[in-house]
Amino acid sequence: MPTKPTVALTFDDGPSIYTSRILDTLQKHGGRVSFFVTGNLVEEHKNKILRALHMDCEIICHAWDHPDLTKLSKRAITKQLFNTIAAIAKVTGKVSLMFRPPYGYINKNVEKVAKKLGLAIINWSVDPRDWESQDADAVYTHIAHNIKDGDIILCHDVYDSTAEAMSRLIPYLIDSGYQLVTVSELLLQKYGEIEPGRLYLS
Image (cartoon, rainbow, N blue to C red; front, side, top):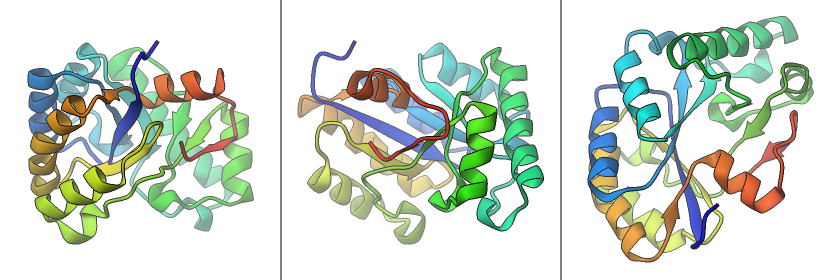
């Protein structure tokens, strides 16, 4: 169980060529993070996923090809999530019990499918909008100035600028007394359980 102030760094939309740089930084400085992976990229980047798993990071469902789930039928939402969970399980041997909806968008259909599949819904409390700026200094500064105990931080491991920001941010957070934990660890510490169909922001 975490013994210091905790934060969960999370990365969406990968894996990509930049995921390895983030793992290199973690290997050098310590800590664990959570990757919300896109299902259609899992097989291509399975070695990165297995490396992350070996480092005690967490591999979680995002969706198969990043649609706005709120515009899909319940059947199509189910397919997006189930196929991604299956792809993760094939590589890791572990079944994802959480997911993050693309764009953070949810509606009643998304909530109903999540509950039926036994999935908690994970969004975030700190968003540096790294996809928009693609500026390492801006990403680092936003997170460093807004972070607090218990936060879930949204980033994307598909940008060189984000990987560069993490090379500074990860050691900064550790030196500042934070423990970098997975989303599961953070939520279990805070709530004692992770409930299917429930939306968690931190």
